[in-house]
Image (cartoon, rainbow, N blue to C red):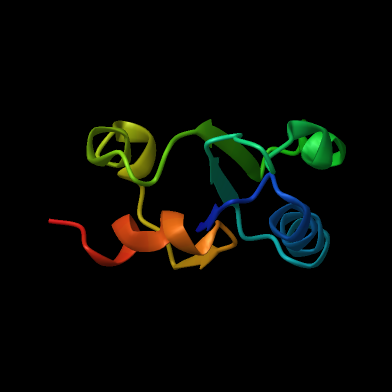
Length: 92
């Protein structure tokens, strides 16, 4: 499994669509669905068993410590706004 932060935005969603088209590796999209995130961008894969989505804010430590994020990932691709990335680097 790979995590994709900002995966409901334009660039992130296109990455997810391409990933699921070319790989059997599951994807967990994490997005807070603010101004740029839109689940319509992921409508084509919403019934794909390799796709998962959680509405979470990566800057909220409690949300990032939730069971949804406790899965083991082989990688994390970040397509979120630069200002939102601080929690990816400064987790306790």
